[in-house]
Amino acid sequence: MRISSFYLALVLGVQSILLLQARERPLSFVSDPSSSLPRETRNSLESFLTTRSNRLQTEVFVLLEPLPAPSLEEAKPIFEEFGNSWSEDNWAIISFRPGQIGAPLIITGGPFLREIVLETWQNELTTLQELSLQSWQTSPDIDFLARQVADSLAFVSRFKSATVQSLVQDRNEEILKKHHSDKTQKAYLIAISTALLLALAALAFLLRKAYLARKKLHFPETKWNSRLGAPHSGGSALIHRFPPPQA
Amino acid sequence: MSSSSETRQLPAKLFQKGVHDCPLCAAKISSAAASCPRCECHLEEIDQSLGTEGPKLEKIMDFAGILNGEDEAIRKSISTIEEKFPQLKLMFCSLKCPEEVKLTTLGWWTLNRGTHSSIPGWSGLLLIDPSSCQATFQAGYELEIFVNRQKLEALLSECGEWFTVGDWSGGIENFFQELHPILKSSHHDAITTHKLALKSLGKA
Image (tube, rainbow over all chains, first blue to last red; front, top):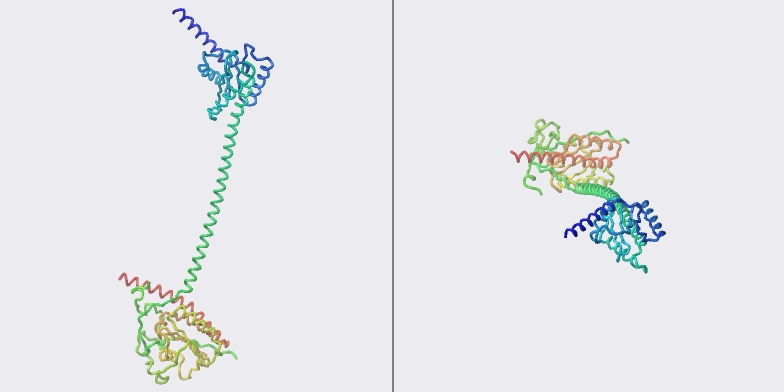
């Protein structure tokens, strides 16, 4: 039991040392210590991934080496830690141990993950994994997979950014349009209200004028005294003498 | 809309701003003088010389024939005023006044002894004697209260200029046309006074 415990501690210690070593960013995007890829393929892929990194800020690391953990599930968080420490941009790690059965492991990370629907992205990656297996060769087509992942990553991250920018622009235009529309509407409203008020005032004026023109005027009835024995008129008359008409 | 307070009769002196004078000697008399304190003028005395039956009073009475039938415009002007002021009855009369009778006396007698077709107190008569070159305006008891004497005097003077050039119908038409705004103004003043008086009475 003591010997077994010793070997277990030794294995764990060796793994820890390996983990510490693997956390350093690889010197190239394709890490293939066992030369499982043909040289030309590796160089071409390396060049492709470097270009993508420089132009589109998407870094795809291809690790063709043993997993840093006993199982795929255990390896995932470790790769996430690696990726986040290696790159500040959007990144992907494609891990495949030569001789492994099944599809390579693909882990992605970076700012774009916060802006996309993760489920859709995961489906995309699964599709790529399956496509990489549809080959007559005994091992998955790592070159195809790496290129596809790099393209998808670049596309998704840029598409999101473009969409957001476009949305913001559209939104701004919409706000501006709405602002102009509101302003025009307000101006029309003021103009119509003013015209209506003026028309109403004119109508009121005309109606009042018509009413006053038709209105009969009555003097107040009064109590008066008769004078000089006259029943109808007291004789307070005005008299004017004018020059005789000219012949 | 008329209430009892609005139709309430108020004393004439509330509205009247002018003075009363004798139609015979033009002396100032009180508003209820039984006869003139100076000449002792009384209608019955005038009746002795002019009779007790006056003419039938119509809108146009051109006894002197100065209009030559051109009375349509005058008739229209009078009708306009009467439509606006349904209480009023305005008339025009031209005649050659006997030398021994004063025109104001004749006008006064005509209004009192003539046959009226409406309430005599609201009658107004423009009387012109082309032979003596005189024009007078005589009003019934009720109309005289509201007529502004100064404005009427100015209007008669203005119309005299038309008569001087022989344009009788033009002058008479102008008289009634210009009388309209004078009556409107008088009506406005009277209504204001009436309201104020009723308000004061209501408070009292």
